[in-house]
Length: 159
Ligand code: RB5
Image 1 (cartoon, rainbow, N blue to C red):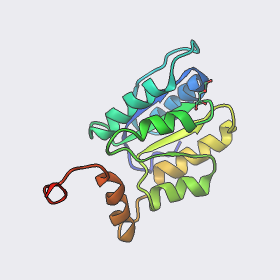
Image 2 (image 1 turned 90 degrees about the horizontal axis):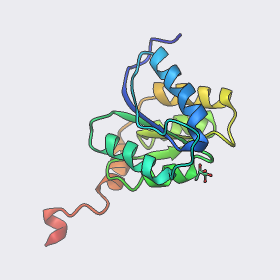
Image 3 (image 1 turned 45 degrees about the horizontal axis):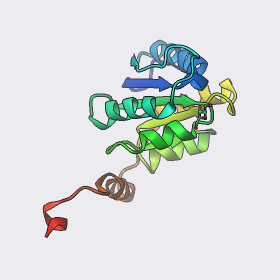
Image 4 (image 1 turned 90 degrees about the vertical axis):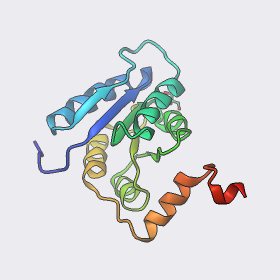
């Protein structure tokens, strides 16, 4: 068990197609010492992935949670939903190098995984990389801010 990394307050969610991985991810995160709140869904009964993506997105975008982890069948739809919330930088993660870059360059705060397309061992590996990689800042911070600022009306832009 790796207790060396930083500990986060993490919002967790999935639709019915991600329920099994969500359960496993929750167990793993808690074992690693993270504080996890499960935003559902709580069974394999079909639910619409946008609703869960928005809930976890709001939890992270509001600043109440430092990170979010989402799972759906493909990782794609729930990621699109979460990214509608201001302050969320969600990425669909399928292999370790993009997991690393999502943190280093994009300061990704919501990781989205696929239960139907990605094997469990790969999800575990990617999750560990994503949890333990710092954002690099510098020129990347400016670009991340450009994403966060999009659509925000400032006093200057209103003139
Ligand atoms: C549900 O069947 C599926 O569409 C959903 O889990 C996800 O893959 C959507 O992007």
